[in-house]
Length: 273
Length: 292
Image (cartoon, rainbow over all chains, first blue to last red; front, side, top):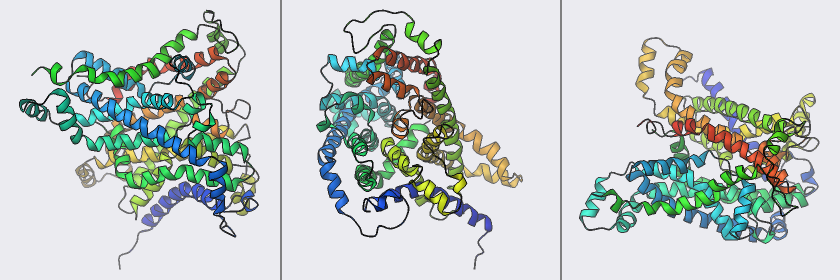
């Protein structure tokens, strides 16, 4: 039998300590979401005496979760469509045509990855354009703030698509629009999926934009709804936990199925070049 | 072939329009408004010169604390996440670990969750009397370690930083793993033949070759740190007192008080600061392209 070295045992132990540090807080919340209000006063790893599925029903009803789920889906979904649409076109042209104007435009937009957003002055602009408290206002805003990173990722990917393809298509008589839609878009599908998933998750998770620009609680996304629910039901941690589980759930599902794209996209952002 | 014809510049218009109007313009306009007394209570906006900036830097105000906290947060959070991330990446690329992918995914998981959710979870875990952390400490006989994690002036800031590291280290780990996988094993083999120790290999091969990746992660961590809002807002809302307040929580509180001029001035300071290091940021993000 092969002997297991003590160093291997120690290292595996360290890995489990790290993983459990991440896992335990989530497990506590999950367990808590099935407890009665009385049991949930003390937060520990004990199993619920009786599994209270009704917590979830209560939360969905009183936390207006159905509406806010739809709102989050609308915000994240439509913003992602808008981002993919405008950014794929822009990054295609910026990466193919390297005139100095195009270079300046590229750096100007990519700078937005680091730039802070001035929400106070933005309020002035949003009001001027009648975008405050509207759904499409929030969608436009999410598109705007996520364009820089999306452009950076797509630009990097399009660089790897050989230019000869464009030339061949043009010789075959394709116009600029046809070339982009019929030839380039299908080739950059992987990066579109990556950008789409990353943006969907970050928009789903955001809550500072609606905090500033959405007063109407009927239009709140899940994050703001759960925050508000927490304010009202601070004493019922079982309900708050159930709300937290439901809000995090869609993102976890996306994470499980989109792992490859998420990890790939995240690393591409930093390991480029 | 004419590049103009097959790569029409108007393809950029959509992205540029949204970005300029809803992202860049507020930054510039905000600087303009930082020289005024713009507020929610009077329709008039008057030019006041550097009054707002004076209030931040000269008066006996809290604003100095927010700026200091933002810098401390950025520095400590970047260093701790990078150190932890590299350590985890080294650990989870080792051949001796079983089930590497499970560990990697678990540790990366918090990265995809909302700051707000994580803030609420930890607000509860940190609760002094019924939170999971103190209850566990009491149960295993370490009562003396139990603290009022988010309510104590000495611990609140550290607790916020700890939660931030809990959430963000997995990201650094994932990126460093990708960087480590790109290093050719022949370097290590050659070093082994020369009798190099683990530490020597780390110092002379791993770190130098990871430098670009680490630089990149650091830039992202720094720009995140300066803009931090969600986590602080949901964990402590800047409290106790101003102990954990950062620039962006101060901006929000000025905004909700209707004190728009001060909000936009604080935000502009951040804007100006990041713009002043933007050359460095772009250079790191676009290695090999800026030099062209």
